[in-house]
Structure formats: C-alpha cells, structure tokens
Length: 83
Ligand SMILES: [Ca+2]
Image (cartoon, rainbow, N blue to C red; front, top):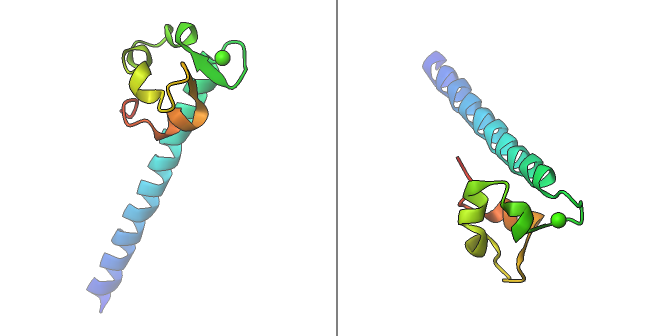
C-alpha cells in the first residue's frame, strides 16, 4: 500500500513537470514571436523572420495558409521551432 502511494506521488510529479515544461515552451515561442514582430502588427513577415535562422529556414512550412506572414497561431502550432 505504501509502495502504491509512492508510485502515485511520482506519477503525479511527472505529470506536473510535463505540464510546466509544455507551458514554458509556449511562452518561449510567444516571446520569440513578440521579439520578431518589430512593427507589432501581429504577423511576422519574411523580412522580420530574417532575424531568426531557424524560422527563416522553415518560413514557408510554418506559413500554413501561405499568405506570406506567420501568425501567432501558426507559430505556436509549428513543430519546426520546438527545441
Ligand atoms: Ca509584423
């Protein structure tokens, strides 16, 4: 019974840590977006993306709707920027 409790606590700690790390990942991408969006229009143009090699490299793949700009949603759903 004590063993079961220990396992439960370990399992819950893992879940909490995973939740925290996934939140901080989003925050990192959000702050990257804000930093790159120099004119603060809520979109990252190709010119603004030039400040970030990995973003520039994957620009056309991240730009899901192919409008030539990366929105916050496209940025957050992109698998290409995850470390
Ligand atoms: Ca912009």
